[in-house]
Length: 221
Image 1 (tube, helix red, strand yellow):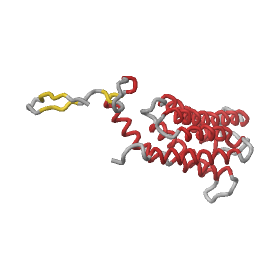
Image 2: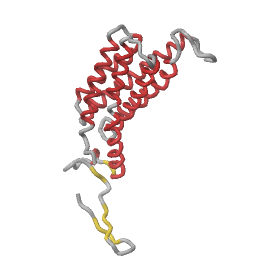
Image 3: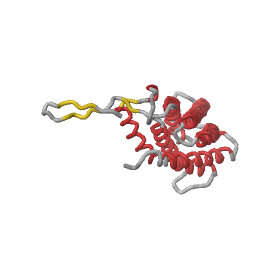
Image 4: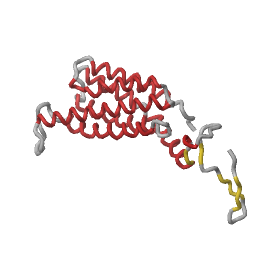
C-alpha cells in the first residue's frame, strides 16, 4: 500500500494514507471501504465480539420459560431479561456484519426485530385476555398485536440468519440454525410444545457458534 509525503507548516513530513482500504491484493473497488468507515467497522466489531455472548444467554432464558418451571424472580422477569439480551445480541450481530456484503439484510433484520421487541415487552406484563387501563384496543385486538410483534421478532432473526449465511465471514451453518430457530421464536407461546423449547436449543447452538467465531475474527488489541 503506497503512501505519499507532504510538508506540514513546520516543515516536518506528513504521512498520508490512501483514502481506500480493502482486501489484500484486491483490485475490485466495489468491496473497498473508505479509511474512516474501515476504522468505524473495526470499532463496532470489537464491541460485537463480546456482546454476541448475549445470544446464548438469551437462548437459555427463553428455553427456561418454555419449560413451565416456576422461578423465584417470576416468569415475567425472566422473559424481560431474555428479551433485553436478545436486543443486545441483535445489535451485536448487526455490528459484526457491518462490513460484510450482507450488511443490508442484517440492518433490516435488526430494525424489524427491535420493533417487535419494543412492542412485546410492555404486552408481556399484561395477563392473558386483559387490556391495559386506558388502552384504545380491546383484549382480542391486543392479542393480534402481540402475535404480529412476535412474528416481527422472528422475521428479524430470519433476516439476520440469512445475513450470517451469506456473509462469508462466519460459519454459514450458524445462519441456518438461526433461521430455523426463528421459526419457533416467531411462533412463541402460541405454538405447541416442545417447538418453543427446540427453537431455544437451536438458538443456543447458533448463538454459541457465532459468539465463539466472532471472538476469533479480530485480535484483542
